[in-house]
Each structure stands twice: as C-alpha cells, then as structure tokens.
Image (cartoon, rainbow, N blue to C red; front, side, top):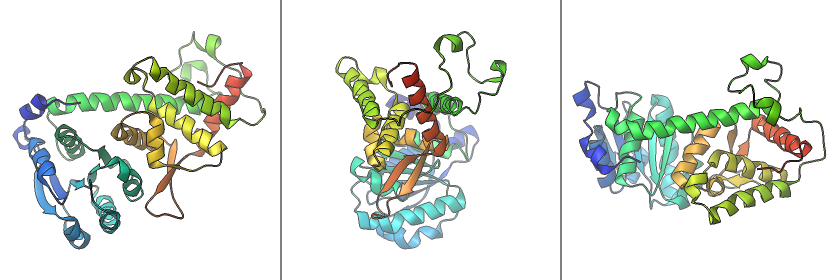
Length: 318
C-alpha cells in the first residue's frame, strides 16, 4: 500500500516529460475520483453523471482511463452504463478503474471483466491514486515513487500465478517429455525426493477430500495471522475444483470469499488467474447481473492429476 506522504510527493506526469493520461469520470459525486486523478497527475477530460453517461458516453473517443464510481449505484443504472463502458474501453484500449461495494461484485463483474479492468472494493483515496496511476502507465510514464510499492506487489503476484500455471502444466504431463535441463523452474535435487510418479487412472476424486483440505487451511487462521498464510490462487483453485465435482456453480463474489483475502485483492487474483488460462468466466443463463467462474480444461486436468498423484503417494490434499 502506498502511503499518503508518497502520494503527496509524487510528481505529476507532465513534470516527467510524459503526456498526462486522459481520464473520464463517471460518478454521482466525483470528489474522490477528481482528487485522486489530480494526485496521480492525470488530466480529467470530463465528468459524467450516471444518467448522462447512459446517453453521452460514446461521445468520448480519446480516453486513456475510465474512472467509475459505482458505490451505491442501483442495478438499473449499472445495466444501462456498464455495457457502454465495456464497449468504449475495448474500442479505445482504455483502462477501467471501478470503485464498488462488495455487494456489487457480481453485478459489476457480469458486465466488466478482463485484464484492462481494476476493481476497488470500498477504496480509500490512496487506493484510487495507485489504481489510476497504474492504469495510466500504459500511455505515460509513472513516477517511480508512486509506482514502486504497487508494482513490486504486482510483480510478486505475477510470479506466483506463473508458478501455479507451470505446476499445473507439469501435472498435465505437458513437460514430462522435456529433459530435466530444459524444464523451467525445476531444482534438480528436489524432484527425486519430492516428485510423484505420473498419476494413473484411479477412483473418482471425492469432493469431500477437497473440502477437508479447504477447512484445514482455514483452521490455520485460528492460530496464526492470516496475512502470513495468504495463498489466494490455490484457495480459489481448490474451491472451484470442489464445486465442479459437486456440480455447483460459483459466482465471482463467492470465489472472492473463498480466496480468504480482501475483495480487491481477490478480484485482482481472479483477473491474473484468468489471464494465465486457469479461470474462465461464464454468464449466468438465468440472471444477466451475475457471472460464474469455472476452471479451464488446463486447470481442471492439472487439479485431477495433482489429487490423483497425492493419493497414490499417500499424501493429503493440501
């Protein structure tokens, strides 16, 4: 998290010789978004109310970032505006930063989703400044003092997602034909000691075993600070796999709960896991204001092979 002193000290984009990003704000009360844009060194090209945005949003062609203040906005207005936001963002390669309530996660995610969207649940001014700065960095240069803390966190996040993706790829036997020297990320002296034989066909995986693993992971939080044990990517993989075995759909908001981290962090992880080809979004056929998350074929096969390999080795799913 970037502190207030860092924000106050951050130089505007223009002072660094880079073009300030153009930001369009959609809000009933644009005070917070306007202040955050100023602190991030951005240029506000217009401010639209939700009512005006429903008819005038397409008039803005040169926009780098769309700052959406959705907190407290009713579903009818979300339905009227968010599809237009999505259309404009895709047409102009604009980034989208959405401030929302946790109760709005499903309604917003059903309309806006993808690598160009940042979700901020009940954000502070600091959260808004960091998000707008990162969103505008694609078109401009962001001052290092503003970028350092957030970019380092995102770097670690990317590395962790890549690690999970590589692990699942190995479990699907996609790398088993490669010589050890060509396998990415493998430590030579660990594989003989900790590796498992290729999973053979076995009895169907019991979803109760997956749920037991999830309960065991949550039990740790009674004895240790949760922040020390956060592993949202794996927690979400376990939850989605168990739900699939139970033939149960998982909404975006439910998956955020399963991640056992703050909603904004969980939504960021969902986006990264989707980019890594592990998660996919599916619309709810009965409710257009809700979307479900599911495993991709790659992730599903990896989870099956992991559980089978653990069972063959006499190990618990962890």
